[in-house]
Length: 141
Image: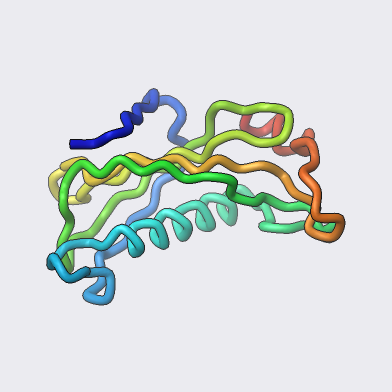
């Protein structure tokens, strides 16, 4: 039974990608390990950023840094299932917001997990949080 409850409106999801569960993603209980799922969420986020032409860090050293992660597991997944990752953005503030994820089995639509990454914009040269660039805010907020 999940201790945290996540739910997201359907209209926040603006990107999707698919990834297979690899044999190396399987844990000792013979299902998708949480460490592998987190890596897959990071890959889905990276693909989202590439699709929208957003660099992890720009020429001024300003980029996105993950501040927290919450995951609610809904069912097991096994090798070699194909998973569908839907990605969106919500809960914006002056400095960032949340990347949200809905993961399901591609063939059946069975829910596998919901997750969210908190993020802020960060100046990697000065090591400080900075306000969200207007170009990002106007595109997604």
